[in-house]
Image (cartoon, rainbow over all chains, first blue to last red):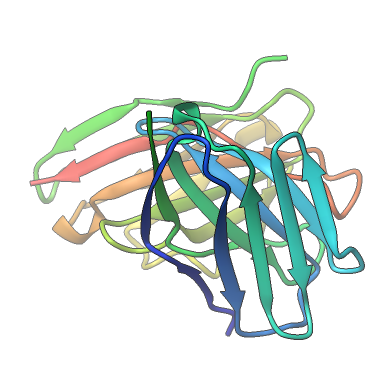
Length: 112
Length: 115
């Protein structure tokens, strides 16, 4: 049974710092991995989706990497801003069009 | 394009009562998923519709939960009778279903509190 772990559970950084959020999964036979952002009281917004054949994806200041063999992914946020404060969720999919398996998330606070 | 919408945004009910949650997916999306997050836990899958058919309902916790998707458009999730442990945030997500790698679009969730 696939399990997803995210470390740390919470993180507080000063504005401008670069930071890394970690995600690990127990079964490396994944189809793809997705990073989401959730703001308080809001739904989940997809940030990056990495297919199993890819090593990384980039969008603006965000870069997500995937090491399938070791069951790890990282989300790198460059030059953090207070607007980046949110909960970041990692989710994997074991097959196409199947449900996502989520981690508990990392709650990020960027202090101005 | 309107996003996934959910109603109500919040619901507070007493144990033993019935609650019905509604999800309107993005127009044209064949896949509709229900997920739930209870306090302190990760978001967990409940069930998956492809159009009006239940593709996978392995995550439904018990027979107090009933989901429908009449006509393959909106979906309802009924909890009857509600128990204290049903409290949490219920999310709905949809995707087109044309390709196997596309993302799911999530609604804002319904926050359910059972007293």
